[in-house]
Length: 488
Ligand code: PFF
View 1 (tube, rainbow, N blue to C red):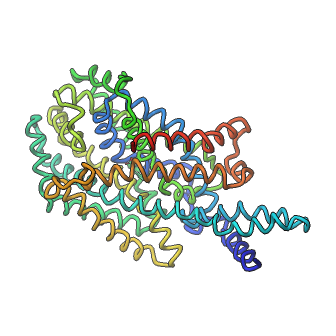
View 2 (spheres, rainbow, N blue to C red):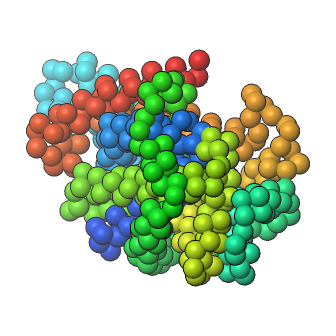
View 3 (spheres, protein in one colour):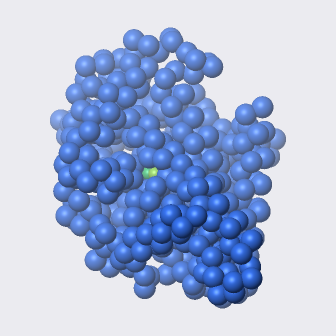
């Protein structure tokens, strides 16, 4: 028993209450970095494709509802865990669990006649540390997502070169579709771009948060927003604008089924980067003075804004060129956008700029996908960042080969009706992230002592209680029901 006390005291003392891996230089940089993680291929590549595949407006409606009542409250919980724990996700979860369980014994220590409850609190020690498994699951989810994310990001690099060399000039729909299909059926090319993207990611990650990431996000976020707004204005001039907008914003309630709901919820988790510890690790770099509520709300708003903007850009194009929104799949933006770029004056310059920015958007997300694994290895095994990055980067790169082959040689090999890529994408978005988010909500709602959370969030009582109600009951129940329904 006494060993346990000593062990627990050590754990509590070990939390430096000051991040051991540096801090953002300002609140704005956290907002930029978290937005950089959230805004990525998910918003511009995946959101329009998923919207098309899941019936348009119905999907968008449920997506927005999921962001507001499930994803944003869980996002606050995730950032809270990181900022309070100030270490990698595994260690932060462990620290918080032990801190909350130890409150018992500090209280009971004062009165010697409450030995029973004291004993109970000691024996809970190991149960509480099981929460670190959530951190582990997150690390694995990040690696799995990055393995296919990097392949798609590789497509954007290739499209930068295609755009710059005028390949899109006056391109027709058939030509654009052929260009894309020829490209993805060539595994060597995909491998080359995937490798290049992983090298970029690892290079930035190896340099550390302050060095690499801050510089990248400061420049890219504002530029990406600006270019997207310009493109949305261009889309307004297209003949299919009205049809595209109606398709996106007028929900056809009849199309809502359990799969649409599960897909929209999964998309919300994926797009906001929650449920796997990325935001936990970014939260651990956040200074204690910043308001978690304020920064997470800004990030969630910016992310949703970009996804909607991407839809406003893509769907008018889809309707102008008579494409079927539901069947284009992951190739949607790579087939539609080139036609629009090819038809506008100065198109190759705008297209080059667009794919460069998409590449930046992808890289600031990919960094956050691998960062939980890196910080864990550095803090736990005292590896250098470079070594940790090399090892994790290599594992991710190898896994990416499966995705590459699922677009060509292995496209006919299906498991549960899905290719390797579809399986990874569905499993991570629809199972791992929502489950991770659910467990984080339950953890903060039931395991962490209320006063610790209250102190950290600094909300007024009514808002705090409503938020706590959501993360204790509404979000976990909603996620569980959607999950069970979707799986059946
Ligand atoms: N949110 C990113 C996107 O929309 O592209 C992808 C992502 C990043 C998912 C980080 C999950 C994550 F932890």
